[in-house]
Amino acid sequence: MALERALSGIVVVYYEHDRDDMLAELRSLLPTAARSMRTKSVDVARRTRDRVVFLVADDEAAAVRDLDGNRERFLEPPRQAPVVLLLLRGGLGQSELANSPGLASWVRSHDIDPYALSTINVGRERTRFQDDVGESPESWLQRWRNGEIPATSASTSRAYRAALLERRP
Image (tube, rainbow, N blue to C red; front, top):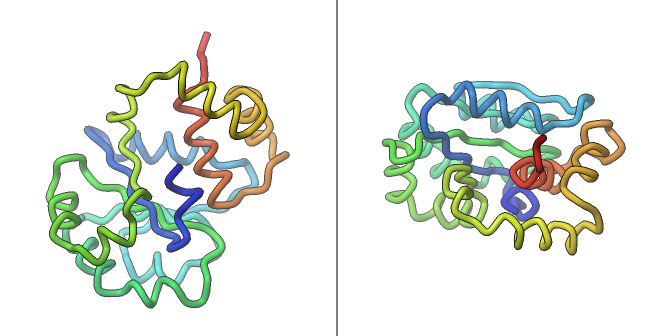
């Protein structure tokens, strides 16, 4: 999953309609003890290394350009938690990302489009999750939410994946 491989510390999540709803969903995946913040500023996101930073810029295209020009500043010193850039699916930020080959290659496979995931074979993905983790998405996610699993980029990504595959009554 994207956060598991996000060595750069930046992940792109696409939202379709309501950015605040997507942000609330993403925050709900964090363990209770996890620290997070929301910012509109790329510079604040870059300087904040000890918590999950949700970057929700007013001008998404400008944020993409700023990120594209500041890769090295994001790499050192190493981050303890990822920056999650929210971009409107099909919007100007996504278009700018396509025109920013440096950033696009940097975050390639570190982007999450929850709406595209609706086309996956859920049964096969649940089996893959169980093979990878050794337990069902529901069981793993409950342990995550209880704080039994440390909050890391990899576990945050796995929580998002588990929540997408979770069977709901």
